[in-house]
Length: 403
Image (cartoon, rainbow, N blue to C red; front, side, top):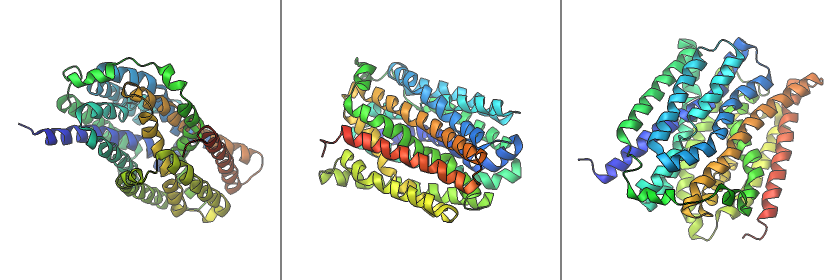
C-alpha cells in the first residue's frame, strides 16, 4: 500500500516528466538553429516563425484546455493531448520541407498545451494547500531542466545520430509519459474535492478584470519576449553577433538554463520571506523589472561583446515576471483561478510566437535595407526593448494605487 506522501510524490514525478518533455521541445530549436538553417535554407524570419509555431499552437489551445481540464481532469486531458504531440514529433522528424516542419511544430505546441496547467489544476485538488506553492516552484525547476537538456546534451548527440533521430527519441519519451499518466494518476470524477472546480465562473469575469487587463501587454511583450530570447534568439545572437561556434553557443545556452534552474529553486525559497515582510508580488515586479531593461540595453550597446553571461543576467533579472501568474490566480476566487491562468497563458505564449517571429522579420528587414548582421540584431532588439518599456508603463498606470 503506497502512503499518501509517496503517492503525492509519484503523481508529481509523473506529471513533471511530461512537463520536462514539453520544455525540451519548446527550446530545442535554439540548439538546432545552425543545422535547420543550413538544411532548409531558413531566413531569420522563417527561423523565428518555425520556433514560434510551437507557441502559437500552445496559446490557441489554452482556453479549450482550461475548459476541458475543469470537466474531465488532468489525467484524460494531458494524456490525450500528448497523443497529438507524439504524432507531431514523429511528423517533425520526417519533415522534408519548411512547411512540414512548421505544421508539425504547431501541433506539438497544441499537444503539450496542458502539461503545466493540467498538473497545477490537479495539485489544487490532490495536494494539501501548504505543498502547492512548493509543487509550483519545482515545476518551474523541471522546465529549466528541460531547457538544459535541449542545449549541450542535444548538441553532443547531434553529430552522432542527427536531429531527426533526436526527435524520434523524444517521441519515445512522450509515449512513455502517456503510459505513466494513464497508469499512475488519479481519475477526476472519483474525488469529491474536485467539485470546487465545477463551480460556475465566466471567462468574461476574468477578461473584464482591471488587474488582468494591466497584465496583457506585460505578459504578451515582456514575458513572451523573455521566453522568445531564452528559447531561440539568445542562440543566434551568440552565433551571429558574438561570433560563437555552434558548440560554444550550445554551451552558453546550457549555462543560461542551468543558472535558471537554480534561480527558480532559490526563488521558490525566498518568496515566502518577502511575503512575511509585507512585500507583495506587484511591488516586486514594479521594482525589479526595470533592471532587466538596463541589462537588455547593455546587451544592445555591447553588441559583439555581449555573450552568454549578459543573457544570463537578462533572464535572471526578468525572473520577477514569474510572479504575474500566481498573483493573477490569487486575485480571483478559486473557481476562476484555472480560467485566469489559461487566459493569461494565451497572451504569454502567443507573445512568444509573435516576438520570436517579429525579431526575425526585423533582422531580415534591416539586412534588406543595407545594415550588416550585427546592426540588424541591434535594431531588432532595440525595438523589442522599447515595446517592453511601454508594456511596463501600461502595467504601472493600471496599478499606480497599489503599494
